[in-house]
Length: 87
Image (cartoon, rainbow, N blue to C red; front, side, top):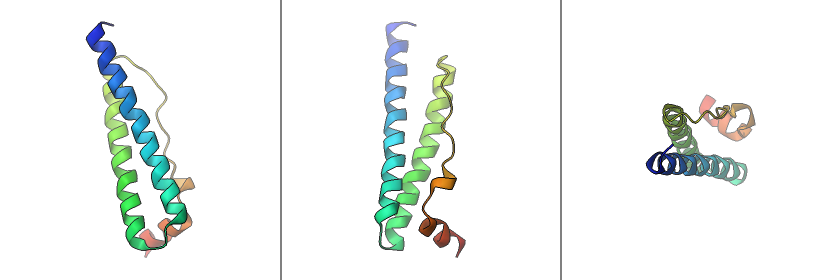
């Protein structure tokens, strides 16, 4: 890879790390939230992070970087959030 390609991959890797941090933040917030409004915010953060992560992984694949895909953590979502979505 050339310098530009290395920089592109470095930036994409940083985006991937930021997405992981956003997912962790949404999970942590859900564990301590007290109302539905906060749950909506954390849900949006989680959805956006997953969408951005998928795009980033696809682009990394286009640049020849093969990494394991992030698995869906649906089972780890707080019960309160699942109950709100079901109602």
